[in-house]
Length: 134
Ligand code: HEM
Image 1: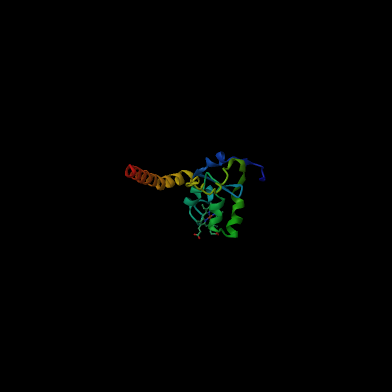
Image 2: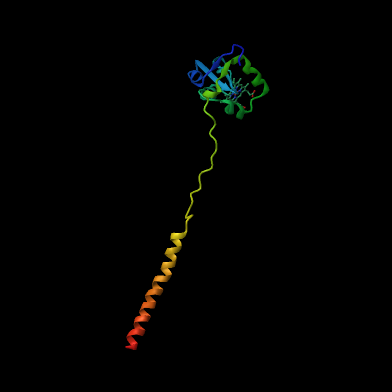
């Protein structure tokens, strides 16, 4: 909970996304970095592109120094209602299609491909034997 106990929703914070009014969400806290945009060593554009979402990963990925983290206090304006931030997408492995799990039909076709010519041959031989004996 912030000093003033202010808790913002993601929608509220998202509106502050311009060079004249720029808020960031980092580690559950909300920062008004409008005055810092020009001075940010990483530039204003990265900060503006980190608005409207949880920028924690973006911030951490840079590997900000402890002095950078200490600076954040002066921009702190409140906390984020974490329930309003969409959960991280969980990795779900793609479902493996069950290729030919049931091989019965395939097996019957193979069997017929073998048996039908054999049957025809059998009939032919039978007829031949029958006509010969007469
Ligand atoms: C209140 C929030 C922030 C503060 C106070 C802050 C402060 C700083 C400071 C002091 C530096 C200089 C290097 C260091 O000391 O680590 C820096 C560099 C940088 N920051 Fe931030 N930063 C903030 C948020 C962000 C965010 C959200 C991003 C990414 C979207 C970002 C991206 C960068 C980048 C790319 C650099 C340049 C690193 C380099 O060139 O070596 N910063 N920031």
